[in-house]
Each structure stands twice: as structure tokens, then as C-alpha cells.
Image (tube, rainbow, N blue to C red; front, side, top):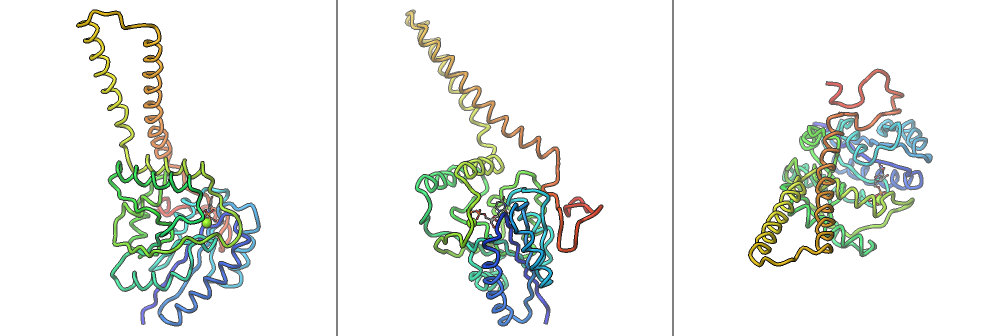
Length: 325
Ligand code: UDP
Ligand code: MG
């Protein structure tokens, strides 16, 4: 019987409170799966994203006790996107699943996800929240508007209410790893690579312990990131607004010529100067955003730096797969 390896990737940032619960739960589920499918083996790859609490100590302990528990610890906080990337780059599995440490991505879904993907019917299984219960109204409103806007202006369709809880084949993971952009917006990347995805619907669950690191502003900035990463439509704003004002200016000039009347009072001029100045600045800002993104891409900095892994501190070896090749 051919062995199959499933890598469970868990990005962690200050998760000391929840890790013991997570470990208990994931071991329970995976042991059951291993009984049902004797060919299935597991590796658990935790990414410590520069945690300031005892997360790293806990991960060291876990890996000392059980060799299936691996970890990568970043030299500082690089963000969840970098964590997921590092996890995929260092995973060995034939299948890979990415899940949060706080049990908001219930391990109980794993057997179902495995069935969908291993049957060959799908390449990826993910979850989709059916309700936004427990979420502030304003946040739900902005979140819904974000999906509406991005799906109108981007060619990549991004499914609403999905999560980063993804069970994927190695083929899909390799496709994702071929996208080495610096400004990473996973929801877009998962869609962009394509493949057949099954969305399992579920009710949102609260964090098991600890606190979320996502504030309203962080989410808002992240949504701008998504829009600029997957659409260049905002750049057309400048062209459209420029055209509108050109037409307006011509119409006004014609009107004055025809009527021969005195319509250029100071208030009108001041208003127009402010309006046009504002629009010009706005458009320059939009262009600046794309320029800034391009600047970061051109610099080609590593997306994360590893401080330590379960095999010790990396010395002389490159950090990412791409640098290695
Ligand atoms: N996370 C991370 N780096 C960060 C912030 C969060 O690796 O800078 C991890 C965190 O430990 C958790 C997951 O990403 O496993 C989701 O974070 P969180 O629960 O704070 O977000 P929410 O569920 O509120 O969207
Ligand atoms: Mg969470």
C-alpha cells in the first residue's frame, strides 16, 4: 500500500493559550483518520510568526516529544501571509492543509475534506461561513462591499465568506508556490491558480482562547491590498475623471461664448480649483500605490527570515525554495 502524507500547516502568532487545545483536537481527529485510512501519515508544521509570548517554547516541547511536530520560527513578525507561504514551501505532504491555531477552523472538517480531495473529484476543499453572526455590523457591511467591488473590477473571481482553511493537493500547492509575488493576498492567489474547489458551508465559531490580531483598520488596509494586487481598474479612475472634467470645461467655455454672460465669479473659481486639485491628488495617490507595490516587488526582498526550526538554526542556507534553486 502506498503511503500518503498530509502536512497540517498552522500559522501562530502569540497563541500560547490555545495551542494545547489545538494539539489535543488535531491529534484526536488525525488518529481517527489514520485508523480509517492506514495509508495516511501526518506531519504538523507550525509557523511561529515572531510571537512575543511562550508560543516558541511550546512548539519546541511538542517537537521534542513527537517527531511529527515540526516548527519554523521567524526572526520577527512577518504576518500570516508570510507564515502560510513558509509553511507551503517547507511542507513535504502529498496533501497540505492550512488552518488557524485558534480552532476557528475546526479540525473536525478534515476527514470530509480528505474524502473530497483524495477521491480525485476536487483539488481543493475549503470552508465557507453561512452567517456573519457575532461580527460587528459595520465590519459585515464593509466586508460585503469589498467582495462586490473586487469582483466587479478584477478578472479573478473571489468567493465571498471563504477562509484560509484550505485542504489542497500537492499539485495546487506547487502552483501557488510558482506565484512568488511580494504583496501576497492569498484569497486572490487561491482563486487565480484555478483548480476544482469544494466549499463546505459552516456556522462561524468563536476563537477558543486568546485574542484576534485583526482590527478594523488592519482589515481595511488588507482589503486595499487585495484590490491593488488583483486589479488595475483603479488606475482607470484618473483617465475617466480627467475626461469628465475635460468635457465639463469645454461645455462651460461654449456656454460663456454663446451667452456672452459673466458667470465666472470668484466662488465658482475657488470651488473648481479645489475640486480639480482634490481629484488630481487622489489620482496621483492611486498611481502612487501601484508604484509603491512595484517598488517592493523590484526590491525582491525575502518574504520572511527564519530564526530557528526543529533542526536548529539555519546557517548559510537560503531561506526560501526559490533562492535555493
Ligand atoms: N497569525 C499569524 N501572524 C500574524 C497574525 C495572525 O500567523 O501576524 C495567525 C494566528 O496565530 C492565527 C491565524 O493567523 O492562527 C488567524 O489569526 P486571528 O485568529 O488573529 O485572525 P481572525 O481569526 O480574527 O481573522
Ligand atoms: Mg481567529
